[in-house]
Image (tube, rainbow, N blue to C red; front, side, top):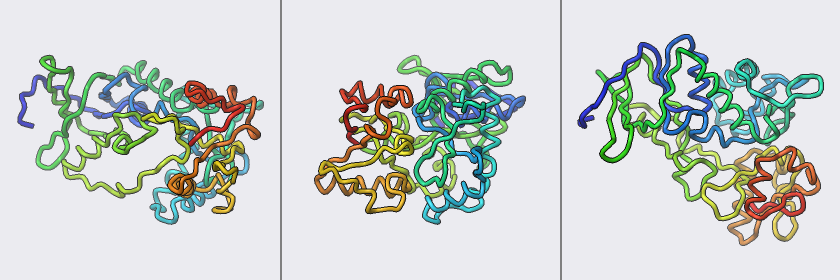
Length: 339
């Protein structure tokens, strides 16, 4: 950077860019190591984390195993996954759920106190832990933000926009970030022993996204300019059931609806997924998304029909999606949801 640096902030711990679930969880797990967490907006509200609905996959249900979870993941990834990473994630997922429980995440429970689990696409059995049906992201984000605020070793700084990674002899040593706008803008160099990018995805680069509009891949860009090798950037997942109400970002209809039995119909009343995959609406997301795309590009309209499977329970079981539908003039109890 050739711009004038207004201030230098140093820590002998970690510097984390991003205050969604990934960034906040990392800071809490690193404790008591000191961490500085940089966020553009209020920690816990920035990025896509708070927008996530369905929940987190982990083999915590009765009869489930990490091996089954890993197998389902490899099938969903069409064999293109890194098997070692899949095994690691599947093995560690239950322990990470316990971490979240320890931090206070209010997961839904069964009558006996065990974690309630739902089923989503490509999973052979229910293993999605959730909060208030479809409010996992917001609840977990708020919980982690509260714990991070309480931790003496974590410094949360909001209102900062990262510009570039700082390099010394080819090694990342910090982040250049701006605070303020216009004549009040200040360029600050944050230096740290370790720099962690928890900056989310790039969904907002597309014409319509279910991500916040700030999800533009800026963290990936900074890493690439610093010399990092970016692996598999072409694998962008398109959620099959964004609600088609002409908005960008588009509201999301969580996959958990299909896990509860909701079906996809075209405007001829055909349940087209049944002829495409044995798991029908619970086929892997890429297969469902492509099938919907083919229907729409052929001139058909596509709807998610929750009336029989969920019906009057919709407001109680899926309050986030219900509110999004009602704000668009759609009552999912009695009408189909356009996707």
